[in-house]
Length: 254
Image (cartoon, rainbow, N blue to C red):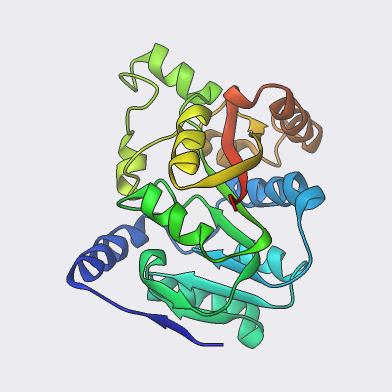
């Protein structure tokens, strides 16, 4: 198997942009983000297929660790060297790391599972990125795309408070994290279909009444119990439009 990343001037500019926002993530995994990784795995477990797995974007490596529990053949493409180093500290040599952007990733491998979580909102051209990943799927493979939800209950409250002008407005924290857009479920499906993919499943993960920083401050205390978190997870299945994250599970359209 050959794996390569061809860098262009545009790619170098994108890498500079990516490295500039990496610092906004800090060195520790936020409590709410860690819980969301677990909920993602629970949501997708019934749909996972055996075989090799590609993860695009590893951040601190917590999701990579969870994927390793399911997939022994795991490749990670990550544009930020700092995130590769952090993740390698967690998983050692169990993962093949490729430093570069998804748009420039070239390999003769085809994957049964591609995990693309909270990355699509960062890329310059989402349809190009989705089309590229669709081309890396096996005929029966599945692409799992997860993004923050513009219509989350917490964002609806933020609009009523005046903290956001509208649901698709980018907050200061969105901008600091390098987000270029925020999705609704219909616009996420639109981009997947425009990329030539077939949508096998879609939905929401975790009903979200509070902002991330509020959850981070309260998780584990008397106000946010494990039972409360589980209730929000179950409610998110019934109300995807109010969830923290939305997803599509996509396949090749042959």
